[in-house]
Amino acid sequence: KISNAVMEVGVYSEQGKIETEWVANQIKPAIEAISAYFKGRLPVEKYAFMIYFYSGNIFAATASEHNTSSIWVQPEDWDDRMLGSSMAEMIKNTALHEFLHIYAPLNIHSEEKLQFDFDQPQMSKHLWFYEGTTTYLQELIKVNQNLVSEEYFITRINEILQEMQEFRTDVSLTEISKETYGDQLGDQFDNVELRGFLVNMILDIKLREKSNGLYGLKNLIIDLCNKFGRNKSFKDDAFFSEISEITQLPELLDLLEK
Image (cartoon, rainbow, N blue to C red; front, side, top):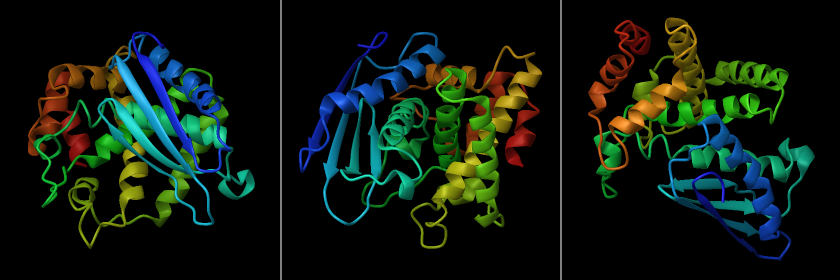
């Protein structure tokens, strides 16, 4: 139990190499950090992490979030040097990311997400916000709650700036978001997530500047969740106006359009 919520962890390990209790012990500090960052309140009463550890020579590591759970696929055998981090660190980061998706897009989403058409998928223009906000908060919470140093946080930002040099800049983040399932821009997901990270960081800085540090991206997320929530959506074309209205900062429209 963390704050107001019960966390459940289920693990299947093909060769029995990964213990459920060990995984739970890696996830726990990540969720405690989120709880502390949001002032001791989590947006769910029960949440389940379901993780399948597979054996074999192929590499696949991915996770999919849902309203009260996330499902992961991870390799049992983990090479720290090849993958750039330990399995423990990977589990913490994945737990942070997938759980934070409760805020966006699971409680902040457009009509395309709420009434999703699985036969003919239509994406929202604001995948940049759903993924960018989540990835930014994932890193911000770690430094805010002393899971990493400020130096690490600055290094991570610089790494993203370096990675951006490989991204297309001839298309907007909203255009890439809308065409995530298309043939032309389907390979630009990292562009949306990492450039989305930087846009959300800039938005956070602007909000803090305008409020003398009293209102930032975290406050905007909470206000948007309160206005919409799980069963209410916004119109895709109106999202920038929603942000401007909630923050009472009409000048944000220009920033977001750029």
